[in-house]
View 1 (tube, one colour):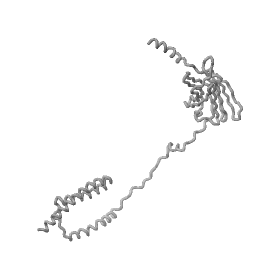
View 2: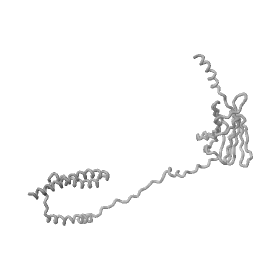
View 3: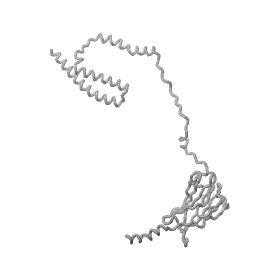
View 4: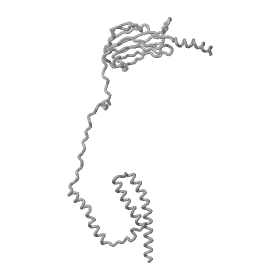
Length: 280
């Protein structure tokens, strides 16, 4: 066990002392749209940054070149797995990340053209943007260094989305309801009630002139059938007051079966009574 521990010590030491990255030969230049150079400077990466922020006009472009090497004697060029420029606004907290292409020999070049600015740049504020370089590698220690401050032209207002007005406060919706219907005068109601009930004034005297006999009306068979017919009338009244159509159909199906059986039985009993009466 002790032998294995001694064998692992060199490996752990090698992992702990991973190679570090270094940035050399960093230069930046600012040129106008006609190609004339407005500013040129050499950056001391990891040292003292420029004293004053760099300023870009609406039609200017910035070019940044640098070389990435291992921090060793030979200074061999390295291509990191990830290379980014970070544009950070310290006042608003907004940031934008721009990838940088690096050749296999470690040569990197980045260009920012304000005629076609990338959409990932943070909105322009009152403070300059803090520009940093971020390097990431699987076999080297990560590196983040501050390069310079940059002042960009004022940002254009964001285009309005077609659905944006739907998320704003809308005017209050005021509904105009029709006034409640008024009841007709009592005299008119009384007249129509009389018209509805007038046929009964004729029907009742006529029924008194028709001879009729119902000697078996209150027998169990006949009374059951009559009660089920009355239950149908009550079901329709209940539907008008509270029930729904599906409930009426369900209850009506049950009442219908009972009414069929009771009606059949009542007819059989009436036929039997009629035959017995004829025989006598």
